[in-house]
Amino acid sequence: MANTRQAKKRARQAETHRQRNTGQRAAFRTALKKAIAAIEGGDAEAAHAAYQSAVPIIDEAVQSGLIHRNKAARHKSRLNSRVKSLAS
Image (cartoon, rainbow, N blue to C red; front, side):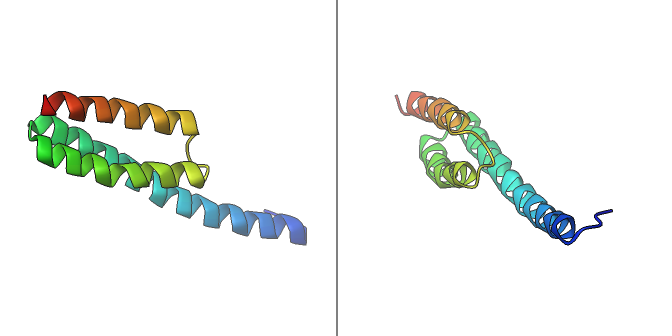
């Protein structure tokens, strides 16, 4: 357990950050899974809508430092290419 005031504060902050990160990570994964499920469902309209709702969640994960920007770009690119392949 933390002994100094500084260490106690850092422990409090770490717990707050951990809880926020857990929620954001769950939202990130859920958005990806919904988009993938919509793509695999074969409906181009639903897949496009799921992709459009997933992009801001992915961007929020980058802004908060949860994931690296290249990982976000990779996810968005792969989802977008799969959505576009449905439309054609």
